[in-house]
Image (cartoon, rainbow over all chains, first blue to last red; front, side, top):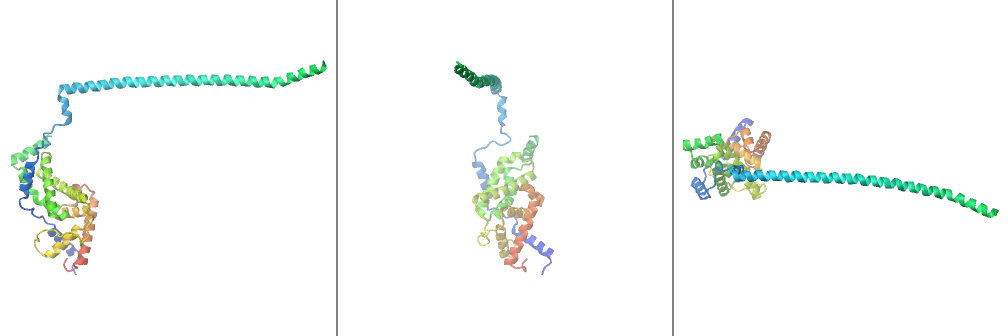
Length: 135
Length: 177
């Protein structure tokens, strides 16, 4: 029986032998080069112009500036309109709440008056009946 | 940008063109694919695709070492992707194809057996083994190429070796190894 280290080294050597580099099929490089030739000439990455280079054109630059400015103005106006409408809505809501509160208190007052009248009326009728019987 | 230019210019000035790079590294790229896929036509196709991708990206690579690192990395990732796309489940030993590799020396039967054992390993451990034993890369280099934690690479290596040793011992016997 072999010592473990020796076994390990032999196994490593065996794996290195088995997984050694192999030569590709003959004509491999030529086939790669032919495929490169056949491909449509792609612009090398180094020469590709970044997308933001379009802003070097004066017209595009001015158009972009105008678009951004117009968007800012429209956005600001819209935002102010929205804020004004919201403030108006809040004020209307407050007024409505106040009106409801006043109406509620008035109704409460009227109700208490009615109750008061109803309570006082049975005594008045009894007095009327008593005077009728005396006569 | 300046570095990128210097890399390209350096290649131009030294006369190392794309064709030279292909000839220099064709064996490495093809062998990684061949050992991983155990399928010679597929390995050739994949290796060609790697070189076509290299042709596109060549201006961004700064040095010869960078080209070599890039080729190993891209080949490894392409092999794993190819295997996943093919949707071949982990193959059993009986179903593993006989890799068509000429035997170098020693016992051809044993070498064939070991290749079949390697072909049965899961994708990532298999690629780790190929890079370790074909390219003699350190675990750190493998981790960088496969964008994998170092501990995972070491664990794959240990487990794969243990698995291979066990299979070898079981089927061939301790006498051979």
